[in-house]
Amino acid sequence: MRVVTRPDFDGVVCAALLMDALRIDTSILWTQPSDMQHRRVDIREGDVVANLPYHENCSLWFDHHYSNQPEKSVSGAFKIAPSAAGIVYEYYRDRLNRDYAELIRQTDRIDSADLTVDEILRPEKYPYVLLSMTISNREPSEAIYWDHLVNLLRTLPLDRIMEDGMVKSRCRQVVADNAAYEKALMAHTKMVGHVSVTDFRDLDPAPNGNRFLIYSLFPECTVNVKILYDKDHLASIKVGHSILNRGCKVNVGKMLSTFEGGGHPGAGACRFPREKASDYLERILKILLRNEPV
Image (cartoon, rainbow, N blue to C red; front, side):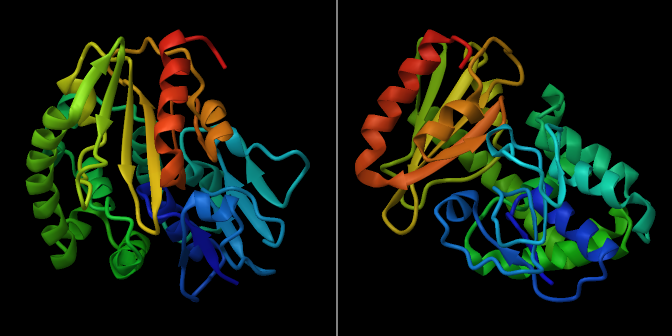
């Protein structure tokens, strides 16, 4: 039995809960939603998949993304919710060895972008928010850190987690990266109507940082579109409703499901061959500028 999930804070918390509840001690399989959608992942009988699109070979599945709603009953649990971890927590609450209630409350807030302006601008003052930002690099080489964080969340309270050497080093890096990311956003973002468009295609590697910062830098935007070139000759477009200027009516997950991606009503992403980038960006912008429910 393996846990299969994605490398973001919600996925890490899902892994901690599932490994606790099901007494799983095998290695976690970390993967991306697009790899699941395109059947590039070897999913086996016995696998527990969380926070990812459904795969028919798995034995249990837990998810909360609008674009991943199952067409039939499956083993596990699905519902539209602030986080997948919250669904796992409800399902296995009586089998867990620790009290994860506060961790789940914070994961719900972070994954659903229910944050204050101060949390966005000064995450170093808010341990859960800062900790979530240490999982920003999605390269497979980072799996050692993701696994380490899962083990910490299963065994230690937050204050001791934040004192862990590897975590402290990552937190310092997050603060530095966010300062550089702010400069990159200002240099590579333009307003198109009410949409802020961040184009990192000319940057290699594309900068990474506080995903909520764009909304405070461009308060007039109601939605942000970020495009960048990914590994393996792929491009990535990420779309998110502003959490400070809530005027976007487009269901992002539903929209991006027609562009080889998916997500939530308020945020989502898609990955595809680079030659489609300009066409997809133009079409996505047209939908967002119309600002009609889809």
